[in-house]
Length: 428
Ligand SMILES: [Fe+2]
Ligand SMILES: [Fe+2]
Picture 1: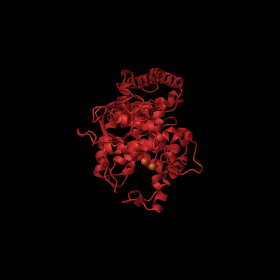
Picture 2 (picture 1 turned 120 degrees about the vertical axis):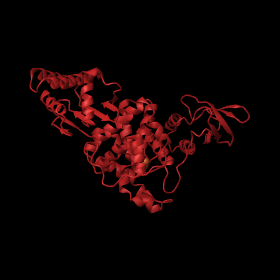
Picture 3 (picture 1 turned 90 degrees about the vertical axis):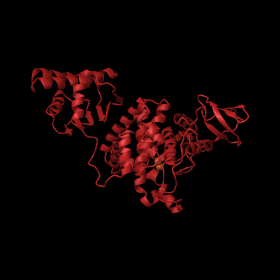
């Protein structure tokens, strides 16, 4: 069904709101507008989800830049009343729409729970323990961390509402990424944060959605991957905290516990009612994200799976996962620079651990494989990228120290082995 049918519904909902502000409840004009809105909704034939987060207004997966006059007054009232999320079922009748609009006109407190309409705040009660200064800084910086934390806490305790809220947060993130780089940029630069697992989940979500979008996947797939990325490490809940924050290499028995987090995560997600129908990728990515493109990782599957059995979304999320883990400070090591992390991604791609094309696209996105970058090649020589081949960014044209141009897409040519730090400081 076309987007304009949804716009007609929103306009008729806006008209109902305007009519009800002019005329008393139950008058002919109000009843007629309610009937019209319910008819438009039936034509649309699907539930309508609206999200209001900060300055963002998202209807379904679409960020609305300029709210049309026909429903601007309604949306402004919803925002002023503190509504962050509104879900209207496809079969909502005129009476239900009127009942809800009545509460908006009379400025009643949120949340609203009707049989067909649920509207309220995205936030659950705040946790008792105070957030650290760093977490507050990140919350202010990214805006989405608080929502992501609450969504993940919900899912950790197997609440199905978490799924709906996760979808909303992810849609808001993806919609924002579509507009600019304002979310991607801070993630690219950020390295030292606490509340590691939460922040990491959000980073991997943003990075994976940016990569999925760069790979020109459909909007629906970008959202599904973003949500799976947000939930990829939920199984870490089952790993003792001392092991997660262990200062130094893990003992073999500790590794065994750590290696259980993908299967714990998949099981935890499958236990949440409605997960498979909402997004079947969630348990798949949670289970496979450490398996590796060449299946050298974990969990080990007896007799190995055929290559194509690993879902591409798991391979895509794995690239963002490895990168973010390297860029974040951990109790046992400093955060790596972009150049150091990029070097590791390239070596993992060459060894087959990470998916080569996804690493290439990711490094292009990070602007690492751009003209002017200095690199060390696998034969020990140094050079500078002079041109990147479209489609083969890992094999660019290199100008070497003798002034020769070497084409790394030639099968006999060496490969990039190290990305050098940039003197301009943007690869710090
Ligand atoms: Fe993990
Ligand atoms: Fe992870």
